[in-house]
Image (tube, rainbow, N blue to C red; front, side, top):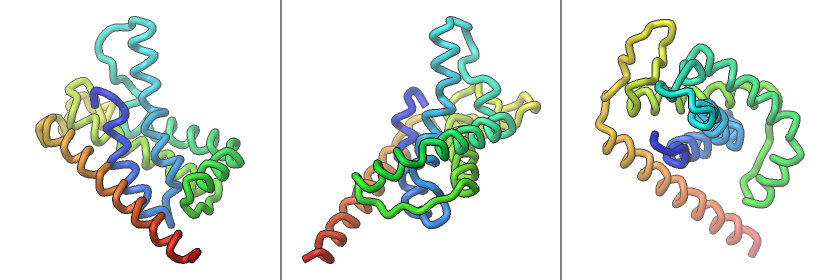
Amino acid sequence: MPMTPFHFGPSGLIGYIFRKWIDLPVFVLANVAVDTEVLLVRCMQLGWPYHRLGHTFLIGSAIGAVWGLIAYAGLPVLNRLMKKIRIPYQTNIFKMVISGILGVWLHVFIDGIYHYDVKPFWPIRKNCLWRLLSQNQVKWICIICLVIFAILYVLSLKKQSAKKQ
């Protein structure tokens, strides 16, 4: 994607729907964690390709697992965040590590469709996901997912406030 925010739609929606099994904040933020690679490549002016080994399912798995462990170390912060946005939250280290991996995989899958330079199945050099959908279709799917996620979240908040009355 041209910018990580597009990833928040699919990751937010999937993470929210499956929050019983997926750690929502770890899953969503894994999409940001993996794009630090692109940021570093651009800031250090390393040139093209911008998406390197971090944007593969293999190396991305390690990045996601490490992100899950880092998030586990920051669990008190995540607990406060989830309480503040009023989403019920229970997790454990296993759920966090798996969610980090799955979050990176979702990112790699989306970027594999969108960007030519992503090699999702490295060491295989061919990107068989490239242009599975058009870039416009990918953007619209991401936006639609974000809207659905926002609607589900608002409905959940209304349901919670109705229970309190």
